[in-house]
Length: 129
Image 1 (cartoon, one colour):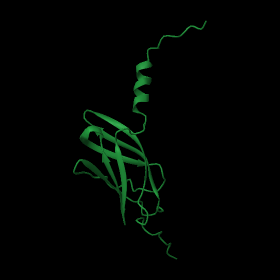
Image 2: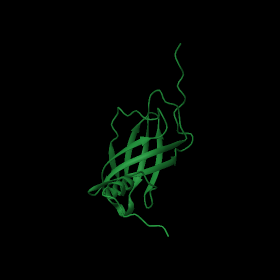
Image 3: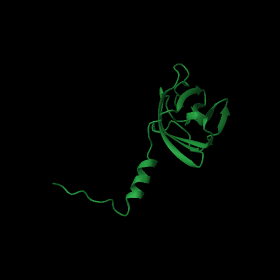
Image 4: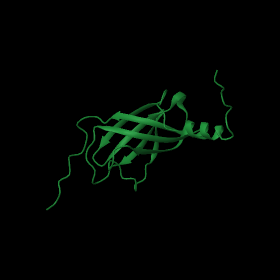
């Protein structure tokens, strides 16, 4: 018979760290849109919960210009997060990464992986001689 150990004094800290890891987004609806200089992430929270703030971290290198603001605006029952493209980045067919959103009195980190509508990516930039 194996003895089971009781949780240690730091068990609550580990549980809180696990709770903050990015997770799938059940109940959340996320779509992407494209414009010549940027991308849009449209987010609907479960039960229409209000978003205080949001920030998106792309998993694709050089996709976004993080020096630019990511304004969050309300669009009906959803919210739109405007994302500036990296001027040296390549086009992408998907927008994947982590969305961190302030909802109520807490924050959530959501895994995002959505298609960017085809035919709407900007053309590849050519290098000047």
